[in-house]
View 1 (cartoon, rainbow over the protein chains, first blue to last red):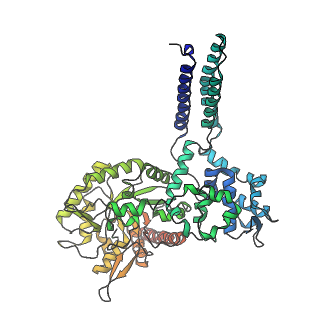
View 2 (view 1 turned 60 degrees about the vertical axis):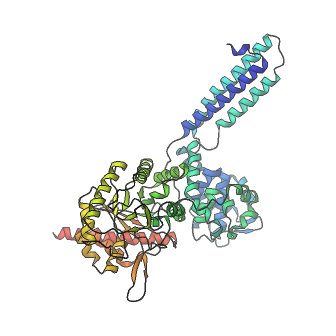
View 3 (view 1 turned 180 degrees about the vertical axis):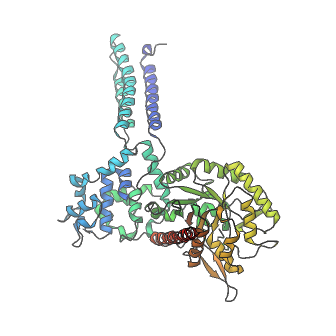
Length: 300
Length: 285
């Protein structure tokens, strides 16, 4: 059976199915090609993780919140100013140094996103993540284009041939087919270029899993820069995860970001260690999970 | 001697501190049982953790030291987890945790007799058969002298380690607590066990319980490592020249990560002192 001889409605159904298959194949081949075992990352750097999660904007946000938390930037309303005692030489990371320079003169917090010098300080994170294939590097982008071109060749090729067949037979009622071609091409392009690779998505999900215990304690995390925990929380889950009153300033400075991801913060209970070990086996025998000395000590 | 490594028990509460300090933490010990029924995502996260730092799996529910055969279902879970995570090694306690179908909810010290030695050896052989690798075996703390025993802990432990393929995970706080509670010399204990089979050391803390005159030391993993445990660690490093893995265990009342890292540094210094003594002895010889 020649599909190009199918009457209009049947061909539209055939074309819909074909496009769906091609797009699914596009997604699956990308996933297979871009998934690999987790690479080693510098997990001590919250800005790197923030970049993985949300790109340069997120890194700048988390860095700004970190500087305020440590008292190096002062927030007044939506404005920021470098603290008098804060010297750019006193911080190690380029993004932090640039923030201190940027706000020597008070300015709006959101101006960080328009500052090209600040944005440039995040480039090393971009490179590190591309080197680890967590963000699409040159070869991954090339492979994505190759797959997309094949998909577009099939989708648009079949559609165009049918259009030519229709025109050759004097048919002009091809509006639905043209719409289908455009929609299929649109989706093919859209699914071909996600910001993260499959490995990147997996890495982020794994980090969120590993830090789930921290998220459960978000309300009780203290500010003041005493520990890295608040910044790791912000890096892994977004600044909206900084729920404690110590970080109320984030909702003034970055109102959209501070609430945008809230839907992602269910109160998933303490999951793994304590709960499961205490219940699944035996409390005393699972001290490792945090059951402590409640049943006669650990002994282990 | 340069291959000694120092690590911390993985607890979700300590995640940020551990992951941010992997330059000072060379290995992480994960409670295996927490992942026996974990979702795929949780297990994948554990693999990702393993990509950042060596991971060991520590079991708490097999109940190896028993005349009752070890539960094959739990062993299969352990085997699957080991296959997925590819840990540096896996370990389990020489304790019994169930009997007659009842979970006793505690890592109990078994009677130290021939029957439990034979049971433990059979269980260790079976564990190796299922998992593919023999576990390291850990001594446990006990608040009562196990009834039905016909030998002391050193003799019982030595018999199991010498007659199995397992190396010894020596929990120094368990040893310290038992020594204090049952009035024996922990250093002398070290001379009676095969120290050449020690691979891993656990460090932990505990608290005193009971009334004056009948006080006992409880191994609760909720307190800092006490000085005598560091002294025992130095002694082990002196007696055991092979590379050692030292794991700090903390299950609650968590101090700052800096405090835990300081305890790990104290452990490093203790091992270094023991190694130095060993070197001096070898040079003198």
